[in-house]
Length: 267
Length: 306
Image (cartoon, rainbow over all chains, first blue to last red; front, side):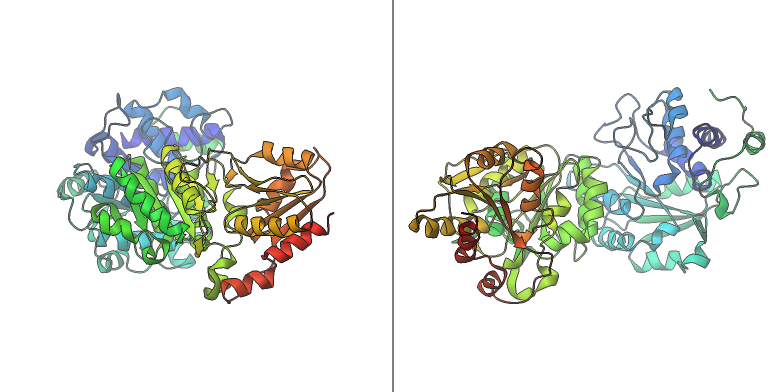
């Protein structure tokens, strides 16, 4: 399924001539594990009150989430091809109006707070759902993330699971060049979080880690630091800031689809 | 006498009994904003996020997506400025059911000085789509409009001052969405005022009445939606308009009235308020004297139009 999500991501961006492939491809394995293995959701009832929630705080990785929502059956496939278009239902970021969309996102730094609010609501109502929120490593430069990190630990939101897509690349360079984030695991531990470090492209590790998080509403929140490669799966995109945002040429598109094992045709 | 911010907190306690989904968020200023009594009444539904307004707005958004009805309060400078992008993107854009109070608005905040006196909040908030904006002038207006905010689906911003407010209304007065209140009648001019300035406008009208100048006074408590009809009526039926607000004249009530009448009716308009400057420390009365928020200064402005 992760390969399918990667193919759809590249097709959407190539077709729309706009989008962010790098951070979508780095997140594909984790998104795949969440939507097709872990999350307790109902396609026939997208707003089911007891569902697990997913919030994409690194909002511009929207293509891979839209691809997941389509392959899961929330959204008709043809809507992928009007992604980012003036007449399309899929905007540049996930919207709460999209079936399967749990929050309207897009502004880096804001949605660990929103996810903490969702987790707090679950705790208040004694529901056993979990709230999964994916952040980018560059996003940790936003101060609000740390306000939320402090609050989630203080409020003991054990039903909140952060997943850091730690691809080490941001728009204008490597995170270490732009603004070094330092020891992320130590930072979250110091803020009172349960921290797990994994390879974000090793499906077994992802699945085992998600399964190992105890279902305790009154406990430390968990941050999964997933080491990933920006642009994973497309050789010329891997590890480079150049493909944070960008549209492949026809030749690049065909090469990407060959490497991802997909068909060229957009349908 | 009671302040509107304390009435807001009391009304939330009353509402909480009727609405189990209502929760109150605070950024550790509840003793100042008036929501401290809610904490005492409903400790399990009161969330102090610490001194972190941006996180407070974000958490309120998350709570609202799960069916909660979050009311929050902090100083207007923080709810309308420190956390404005959170309010715009996490609350107003998805049209979530979050109610935000900005207290200690205007120069009335006094001694704390310019950093704590929000005189730009109306201008900022009203430019954001989906949100409604109310400025109650008295505790009874506050009670009604806080309850109205709970009934409306979607974001609402309520603007309160710091000081005690004179009661201008009867207990059964109604304040419909997008309405206004006429508190004095005359045709020589209309003073349109909001919040703490409604009382000043009424006192100015009394001074003018002694000289035979009859002035209409309107309390424009609903800035968004705005009672354009009442403004147009005043523009046509009275000889001049004067707006009065404890807020910048840029984009506030004065700006709103200008936008309403421009190109439609020709009438003299004087905008009284904070004139593109920051406030300063001082007592409320010192600052009102200094910035022309007195019945005498307002009366003089009306007189100059006769």
